[in-house]
Amino acid sequence: MDTGERIREAGWNRAQKLLRSGLLEKLWLASDAERPFAERVRAEAARAGISPDQSKTGDQLAVMAGVKVFTAVLSEYSGPADRKGQKREAKNGENP
Image (cartoon, rainbow, N blue to C red):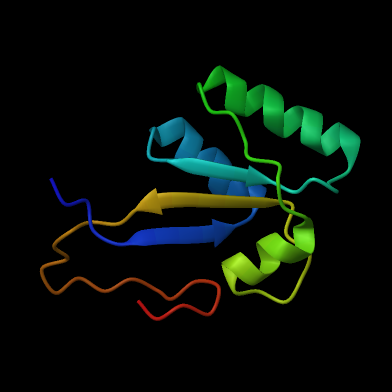
């Protein structure tokens, strides 16, 4: 089944919503994120059965997200295969 486009979004708040909804497919956590924050992210991700990829820095994640600020968390999930004319707001400099 084609799940549609891959969407990446920066930010822990968005990642938490995706984790809770079960839509999150991949989670990156910056290798240079502050330790207490990183521990909290890893703990919540583990509860959802996700192991964050920590192979990239916050600056590298920012590039992946299309933003110009340090990015500690980057989420990836699949968008709908058929939008049936629906539009969504562009995020992080992407074209919807």
